[in-house]
Image (cartoon, rainbow, N blue to C red; front, side, top):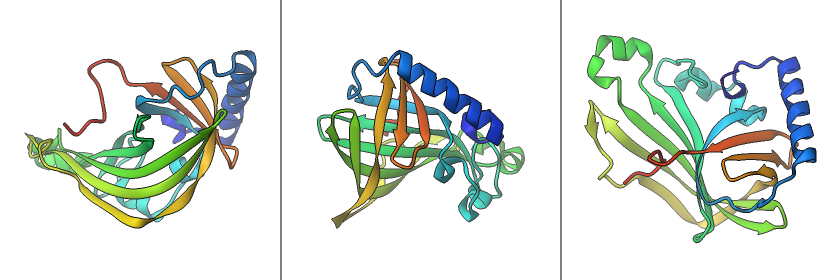
Length: 195
């Protein structure tokens, strides 16, 4: 179902039922063991899988827009610093890589930097800033370049989520609006790191 992007309303309801059963039978053992890099495998949140003008331009869920296609969505969580960075990684669309094959491995990350505080299984989020980080261009690694970060003196509330299930490799959360997010921990050797 492509992380929820291609799910019908009945498929979303069925998966929500499965997630509800899973989290009731085996609740989060270590709910707040959040540290690390995670990749989105499922969401029913409209702000992630819903339609918008931005999606028409860049595409989501592997569907190409005229400017880019989202290939990975996830989070990098640093428990020591208390930050969750939401990341969308883009690549050039198929029409462009067909015309210029050297662009096929190009990647750009859009990042929203949040701080978080926990209370029980709940995480309250505050927006700290945003960043754009090129990873590769024309097949050349740009990891040594610092990301363009925008951080201001003010922070804004961003909402919250409750950790319903976390076995260390798979994490299920429910947002304050009642939507699910399911993330898998990235395996050894994979990361969202810009280094």
